[in-house]
Length: 403
Image 1: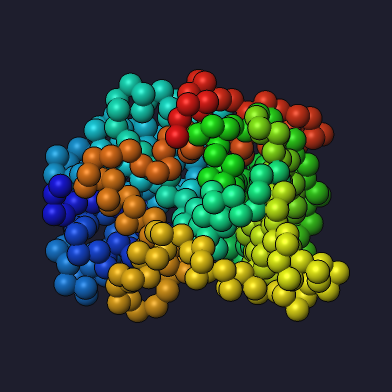
Image 2: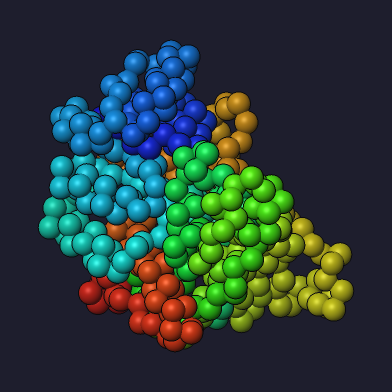
């Protein structure tokens, strides 16, 4: 195992810079050798940040191909816009570079197949950095499900319920990619935060798989209302018809008979929630009131008066905390403050471990293809009025024996 990995970082918008500052630059066994963005002011800012942290000055470029051509690079982390994610991972695998990529949705099922085919041909790993898989409660509930505490899991729910009206509406000013997607597409455009933790619990691609989905979208009104109030001088945007529905609901059926409901809700006023809910034959977990209900326990008598038990999930951490979180809390490095509830730190450490040990990632190309394909498939279903659409088996049958 090498002592330090040499990393290239491509994409230095809010997400890339946030990760560089709070997570990547704090790793003693990671050296950021090169940084890339199409805007030179961003690469300059990244270099300045690393200099302030007494890190070596990185090579700066506006062309990611320069990084892929560097023989000293061990791995590349892509934090670019959604439309580039899969294509960049394919190029990285072709170049023999271990790749990590931020989340988003796919633009076509074909590009998901190309991702899988490239991995199977090159054997070079690629990891989707879906941090919500590593949420503390998500992992505790996973641990409970694996121990049978919740019984047989029958139904799960998740959501990306996040007021993004400001981010989308000011996309041109902030050089952010979401705006064009909301103008031109109507889909479950950000599915992996929701589906990632659920896929782990339902053993998707590892003994189970998603078979079909049906998606419906509400009309698009939220952004128009927001722009009238907050950007009345932007006549071009005021006259724009947004295709992206304010609320998109997608129901997924699985091979084992379980069902999944995921919701996209990003253009109406609301509180943040991932809506993570797991229901089994012996109990359930609900994120929105952070509570656990278990058959046979004293609190089960209060199912009509549940508010007094809101927040009781904290009582179960001592018994069911996931081993990965136990290890992290015991070894928690000193940081200036939590970033994304520390889940970015944990997912990045998992990636570093895989690169060092040259092992397969915990969230691989088969997961990435299945989860990201939901965007393109939901777009098709919505266009057909909620018609069911088949979800491809990107493992080509291996899901029955993979573990």
